[in-house]
Length: 320
Ligand SMILES: [Zn+2]
Image (cartoon, rainbow, N blue to C red; front, side, top):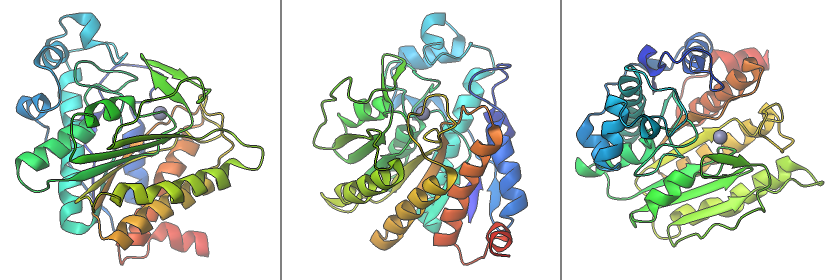
């Protein structure tokens, strides 16, 4: 099994709410605890890849820093290194998606995609690597249809907007925080989203009876929608860990074990349906970065357990 990571994923933006060093920590933990997974460095996407999804004015703004308001619409301070780093993270999604078509499953250890729309960034997402990867694979004639399963805490507004003009794509976002106009809203009942035939938004309302059971039940109920119009040739899974109760944005009472169960359901679904799946990191602003790494590692372990014949060292240690 191959996952993708590159030290250049981290743009040097200094201390920031989004811990840009996190992907490197996840990669180091995977190397240590899941040594049968090979970590491979991807190559960056090019401007032609970005232009299949984003408007030329926006791509140029991120490349040059001008106009600055557009270059920083995702809320990162612009620097000369930003463009190279986001081309690499987007290249990582493409590499993982391509690898999943070969091996059944893969991952990119990077985040920052689902809020970005055609003409701007949002919510620390510069370019929508999910769509950039899928459009590149369609241009290569490797796939014709695909699905995006977005289980980040936040509603995947950018992906939904991009899906609305792409009938070949099915995008499902199950979320515990709403998101629009570059702001997060804890109350998922504050606004009703207009779904389309190929993009569906399902809010997770906090419940007294238990957020774990509610989340898993909604997930099991909604997953068949992804195959309701035929089996997609690839699933990109945004495996968010900001649903954790420790996350400053999360109103949900969920722990790492609950997200592990979620991940197992997702990977079992993909395997049962025979659909290749590539996943990305997502979320992760909890003050205790150890919790964030643990939850990401759980996704890696669930993926490995479902799709790899190797028994992970991590699993053995848990059993012993
Ligand atoms: Zn999020």
